[in-house]
Length: 287
Image (tube, rainbow, N blue to C red; front, top):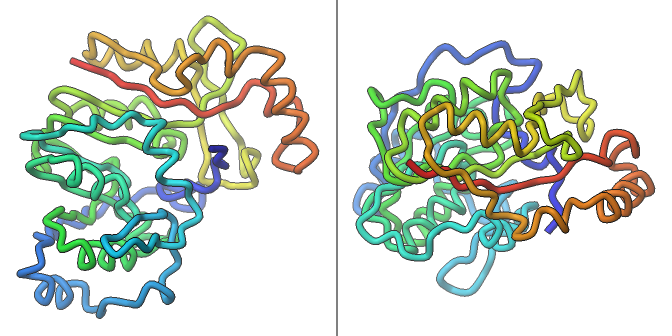
């Protein structure tokens, strides 16, 4: 699966200074209280065709929401544990909630989905998709409208597993964002992100001025592997692994990167000099 960084533009953008107000409206999302939740949202549930979807979410009747994202392929890439029995899970930047609902399917005893930019902020997304799927699946996933940088143990608690997917490169201060995720994580932190400077062995990070990455001005930073591992270990994780791609030394070897960059240039995804050292990776950080 090949994804564009711009597809994940669901957090702070360069045109938005900072969301200082926390939206601490916790919605206990079970079938028994969907009516009260709808009143809190002040909007009725929309039909599938009325919603602009990002995630492609399979429903119980066999249909799949028509999202832009190849969500099932990405599920394989992030290596979410298939058995989450007895675990608590936090999804930071949940959007339509594919990974939140998948964690529930995998047996998690509690799941909290959080977002703000895509639910009620200036992003192009809404919470309509989450609400629709929640109702369709008769889900018990909880939701909290809160900006990613406002998450803390004081207002959400701590969770066994924290998902931080497609979030990091949208943050003005990526180390601060990782510190937020680490502060609420007790066991496993799963990160999926754009990476860059893959030719360097020393820790480094690339900054994207304006909309220079995929013509999307919500993309700020991309670390290389050494930087990701260094930051996460400094935040108290004892073990950090690249879980996707399975063989990064092959997937991001120079011949493969060269061919991918030529394709990106021909499809106008970006100049050769910029894309030659870029990619996407998933990391597992364990306490």
